[in-house]
Length: 288
Image (cartoon, rainbow, N blue to C red; front, side, top):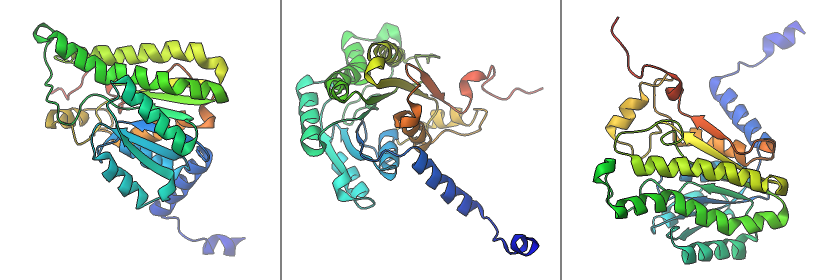
């Protein structure tokens, strides 16, 4: 016994991380599941990070965005995984006919949709839509913000839901924000309203579809460092209790849990992933 203990190899941090990653994927495996992840066009965004994590967990994945860059993301993933597991599609998810075309394409390729991640919203390539205070908003500003953040979620969910009800299984994960459901930001009235609406949709739909084996949950990211993050947002992230902005992968692993069989008794909830930012009274250090 003593000799065995003395000869036991040293456990490195790298080995621990690899083993932990292995067991996470065993526990939360998505083998034989088909997942639709919207808003995955940015290589530094939450959608693309989630797609990679889902592929690692064994899911077939269909990703979408409003521009042709989605096919760059598809190729990057095909370079790492089985080419038959990943597909992409260009669609404006605020237009019902384009959503219908997306869902038809997925069912033709993969047969069904088990998991939906509504991540599209916030920004759109080729559209300059600066933040404005409420008094400065036009009706067009309001419609645009509600459409890309909330109407898109409504249309895609509406299209996918019958497929889930047919098989008595589904996981719907809506990527909202802490802005709206929990806190507000000066100049972000439309975004706040849309994300709060997403939480309301989540809770009502969870009640309606719980007996069909479908769970519906919301994630509220805090300051997450993505390609669209401003310097001010990155600085704000450094003032969280954790002391840094979050990463898209940290949101992605939360999505993975909510998409897994292990989350079957969790529905209608908002999971806040913000480094503890919303629990603190003071957001900056105060001189004593």
